[in-house]
Length: 512
Image (cartoon, rainbow, N blue to C red; front, side, top):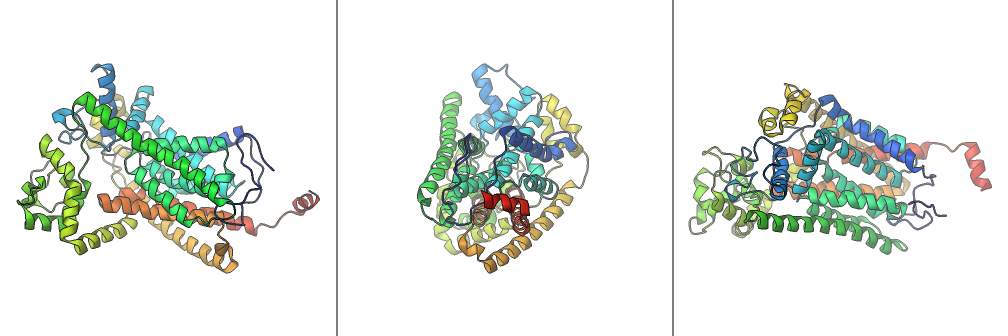
């Protein structure tokens, strides 16, 4: 039997190698699904409404600055939103001095600028709430069809007890990291349960997510690899795996092409290419092996940071952003030195690895494990530093928000998050034990295959961020809500299996 209007054929074998396909559930009309999605978006948008503004981060003005600078190049210098396109990071967020950053997506910045022009940055939070609501409901429609109520209840729990509501309202692309993991999982494991409309929306969301931050393409690529490993090919499954991989791969390529286009256009317009932050150098010198290498091989090594070895090691953030002469390195360097530090970071990392392989690999392994357990919610109350660099109307709105005052939201949300994640681990462990005893895990149901891929995505995110950059709570906090979502999905699945069929339903089924 097949359903029209974007609903997929349901009598095909399940891609994840399972004989346990989701039970039949008649599709709801499009307008009902739209209303449910809007209701979910409203739930996720509540923290932003209660705050009376979006949540801001140190880099938010940098994203706005980059897009605004590009628009000024296109439409003239009269186009201006912010008080100044030079923000207080020693030229790291502007074209002054010939230095401007890659990695602060001009595409996400364009979304912020469009929202400002339309009236408020809260529009960005509303868009992000709508995207996350659709993705969570898409996940439930594929793996637990007919359980929209459980999906909405899950959004309530995630909004209150995890950082999801905060990241939905944060004027940063962080929330798209979790969206990427969940969408890739849903497409890989549930391709035949999706229709053309679902695939089109998923492709659009993934493509923008790839453009929103340069950490997203490697996260997506590695999650695809993990998915292909965990999917157990069944009869006819190979074709259905190839198709979602191709769709996701095109979206990843869109992100890479967008980065190349930005670099070429910006280089042509400004005269010099953008500069990437030296995350690898900052991490290695703080970790220890980098500083040891510099002390042993400078000045013969001829790396630019040899000139700063006397003040090393310092915190990796101070290395890149501090303007204090005692701790700052990259931000204090002139334009040519910045470019050399940035351009030499891969060669420096390889030299350190060759010189101290055990210490380097061991240190990176520790950083990865540490990142797995770091997901505190921090830096909500930073408006006094960030807000002055926003457009005047946004500045006034920010200073009237709840987070403009002192508060303990960070501590409360951090406690809620760690407790919720701990309970989720226990719930998933109990579900694994139950599934092993019942044989469900051996049969490889769709939901269990999806669970493995999502957990792999969480581990990959920790590896990408903790190793390439440095362990930092925000990096894992942006995706940790996926673990409670899995636990809630399994609880919903168990409650459905325990529910006895109504006699009338059984009678109709037998007659059919």
